[in-house]
Length: 226
Image 1: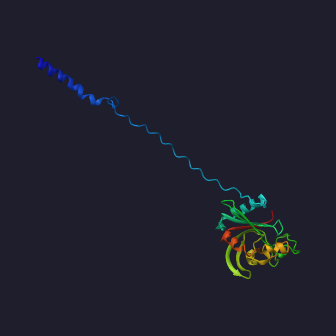
Image 2: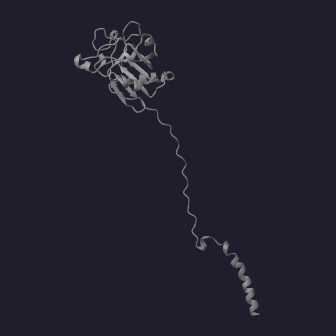
Image 3: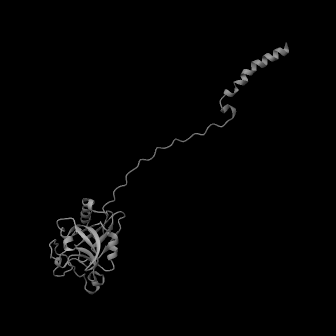
């Protein structure tokens, strides 16, 4: 009987042992699964702000704004929009009046540039008037697009196409960018001012390549008084 009772007791204990795996994992000494930090949502993409109007030393902000407005208005005709040139003919020719501007990073290089005989008949060093007339030998004002290169009467040159009524004859008049001895820096030492062109934007012989490299074909050139 005792043996039978022992067997019966063992039978009663078996179901309890079979339920043991159903106990919680923690009760068996296992480590709980690590907590996973929630993933932060991606930051919203913010469009880069448009570059501000560049600051050009010696040139009035109003003139720079006019040049930038001309760049935007003529965007369809410009192949280079990140670089422009502004020629402020307000100062005398012994001042650096040609500004080469990198709009993207704000870098500015300033060079000497001559104006036309017809714009300064008395050779005062100051531009007195602009003219779009053929035969005037005067400098014309407004927005231009720098066009192709060629070799002509003044050596290597770059054509300019006028975009405004005030310079619409520039191409027909051969108003171009070229180098000239009378636009070299040493003219300031010997004469105190530059010589005069026949209306072209003449720069120093050592500076021509720098102007070409900056403008390429299709950049804006804006000439005016501030």
